[in-house]
Length: 116
Image 1 (cartoon, helix red, strand yellow):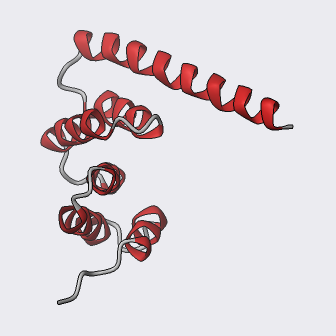
Image 2 (spheres, one colour):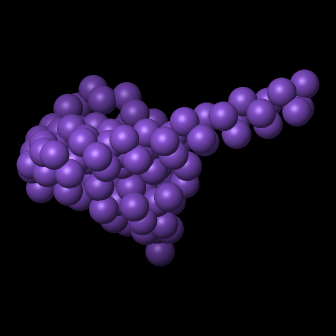
């Protein structure tokens, strides 16, 4: 069972890495579309490439700063980089745009405010 799980994870990582290459090609053809930046950021997030994910979420937000999912992705990337306060701010921005956005709410619940 464990080797089957490792195999599935390995396949997922290969697929995610392949999707980043495909999305890079899409972006070279249309660098002003926010969606491919968001999608590639999500792929980078899935394989724990937080710096690359953050760069793509930032690019997506420069083109459309009213995307709660991109703000959430940005927050998750910042969290992965250990930037907890910045992550909270991004997640809170996502909830300003879409107060019911569950992924942002869940991420905020995992990232409690620092005290002291």
